[in-house]
Image 1 (cartoon, rainbow, N blue to C red):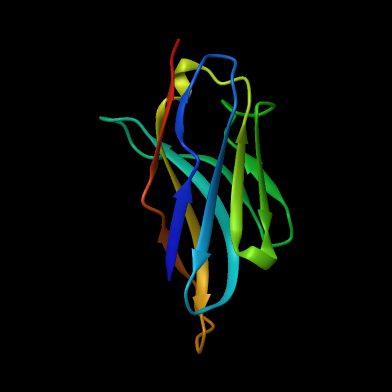
Image 2 (cartoon, rainbow, N blue to C red):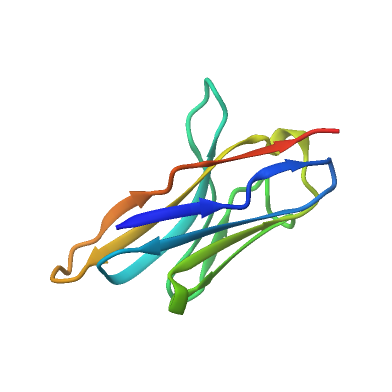
Amino acid sequence: VQLQASGGGLAQPGGSLRLSCAASGSIRSIDVMGWYRQVPGHERELVAQITSGGLTNYADSVKGRFTISRDNAKNTVYLQMNSLKPEDTAVYYCSAKISVRGSYFYSNYWGQGTQVTVSS
């Protein structure tokens, strides 16, 4: 199983970026998918999560600015980031709780991380 993230880059304050993360491999089922971010010298923090049924959870710092969504048919999760601030600068990681074919147990998988830089 692999998670491939894309869509990071440079944005100006107030701008927008959209991150995508596609899961591939021998997947039976995906439960929660989410995005985390990490700044050097700090712990990785939750940005947003979404269940297979579409329930969402956001960090207070991004509520009203970021929107998480998913396409279950494509095993893909998205993060639409609007009204970006310099403090949103970080490496963003996607994660997913996945059950592989032949198993009913879920394990957590991580993508490789994508850099988001917000600067004028």
